[in-house]
Structures are given as structure tokens and as C-alpha cells.
Length: 99
Image (cartoon, rainbow, N blue to C red; front, side):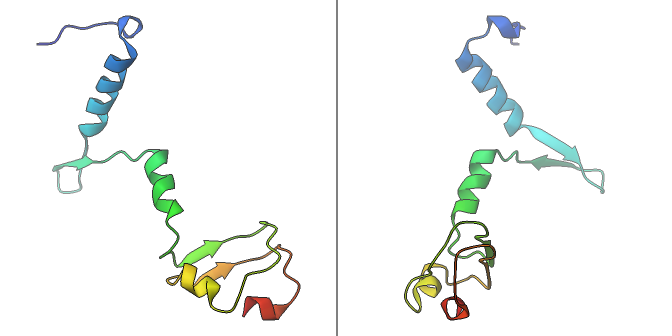
């Protein structure tokens, strides 16, 4: 059995280890009255997943100051899975640049 230690007496390493244990052991009651383990996702993991845009269906690049999109086919090669690319409020001057 582990003894209680006030937070102000714990080292940063002890606090981090305690936080990781708490995150690893979180459960909720399901609709079928079973305990279901949940995973806590921090901002780092969310940002990491959002950073991989190569297979995103929708990408918004509004208000980014984009003035040209490159050669024909460049965008398709960079983001092949994208179906909707939002380029509103940028500095593109011709519809030909979009298509």
C-alpha cells in the first residue's frame, strides 16, 4: 500500500507519473452497464493527426495570403485524397488558378 504524500511535497517526476497513471485508468459506464476504458487524447496527439493532411477530405486555407497555387497537378500530387479545398479570401486573381 502506498502512503499519501501531499502535492506540494511531490517532485515533478512523481506528479507526472501520477498523472500518467490516472490517464491510463479512466473508465465510463456504458449503456449496457459495463465499464468501458477510455483514452484521454491530449492536444499534442490531436495536432499531430491534424498535421497529416495528405488524406484529408476537406482542407481550409482561408485567409492565408495565397497568391498562386503552382503548376497544373501540383496540388493533386500533394493532397490526393482531398475533395474540397477552400481557398476563400486569398490573393488568387483568376478562376484558372483554381482549376
